[in-house]
Length: 89
Image (cartoon, rainbow, N blue to C red; front, side):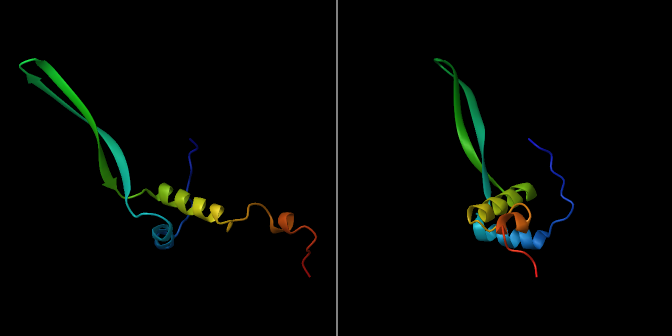
């Protein structure tokens, strides 16, 4: 995983865009273990619980970025690389 550093981001704008393209709540699966004793011996049971949490800033940025790339609203590189023969006046 690459370490990312955010120099600046507009939190209000990021939140506004994020709620338009994703759910405002993220769920994590958490293992839940139960143990006990019975007449026949020890028992154990494992399940998964879903815990809601707000998404992190990095998750919001990645979600908005993926949406923009999927909709082809982001261009990487210099505009002249993509436009080919178009030149400024």
